[in-house]
Image (cartoon, rainbow, N blue to C red; front, top):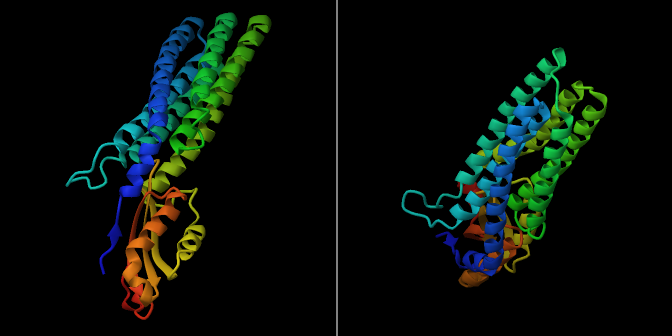
Length: 309
């Protein structure tokens, strides 16, 4: 029996959010421009003042620019239509890039920790005042960028990631301001290395989650916010469906999920399968599953005995 596949609901779904996407597009571009400019300022100031925590924070902010660019890429690529070679379009590239982003961050953190330990052994004089001022600019830029995403953060995982990144960054910059002020008044230069290590730990915590999630999606694992039992229960609510099996849920991109399932259906409901599919798809859309393919089976013939998957 042929599997049903219909994307109409999916496209309407995107259309409803058109103004939101335009607003987000601008938010991402502003975020990328402001944060890129700030990275340049931080690197120059870090080199002049010998401040490791400023250079560390610059590295962190550079990774934020990358993650903002990634999220923007996700929006752009999700609109690229599929072709005969790439039947899902280029959606999956967002997963691949987020995995690379996590790996690069881990390598960067390794360098930061090594440098901080070397600084402990032979401390360098740090210009605390300049350090504090530059980090203060960072608080303003990060807080403003986070504010751009605050409206949409609960509608998309990518946006939520960008928002959290920026909010954490504002807090990290605050840490650099505090250490700059302490160094300015006390000349305790080792504080700079301590702040670098704290920032490194903050980055590692966030990156570990990113690495785990992107690796799970890379391996076609069930996205972590999905509950298979809940999805099955929702499908069973459709009138005429008596059982669901061979259910697979995986991510097409960082924002879109797909499902295939075998549905056991009462024989008398089979002629109405087209309407049932509409109902099922509607239910799944509320659970963030945009692409669904169903294989109907009549109650009498149980495909599990035939061992088909």
